[in-house]
Length: 239
Image (cartoon, rainbow, N blue to C red):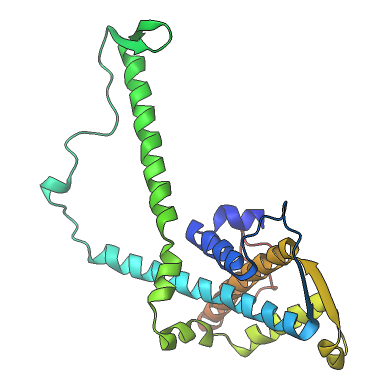
């Protein structure tokens, strides 16, 4: 899970967290002990839906990446001169002397000019990072893309799931529930806390996302005629 969070696109990670939060709620667990009780059949349906959501996120991410690639190809090779920066990044720091600045406690103080320039550059870099973070927090590109789709186009993101994918998801859920008798699905009661359920749903969403990656890789191997490898998750997506 930690490896997935580090290597997956940030907008995918944020979209998964936001989706789970919307499903479970935002009550702080340190103040509210929320317990969720349901029968195994309902839990299985929820687990399948969440895994398919992760599968859908991966398909949507594929489309976004394709769109970005096409947009980059369509861009002209030569930029207008007005769009090009007038100066090289950073400063050459071919300066000497000292700068006088005011300290609110001790009053005026002198600092080496080169060191002062480095401090200003560091402040600018941090401000730029804050702007990027605020822009990314303002809206999630992946979720905004999904919201913009028509119901028919949204359904297409999960219609690519083959029989092997559906079988793998259902088998995965049955092993997690550990209910062998189908008749017990309607009577077997499961109870857990909201925080634990949120962790489970997030994990299942990552599994669904990774299953789509595996499916794409296997499809490519079939097309290229290469021998299939043993089932494994892609690097950085071990769950």
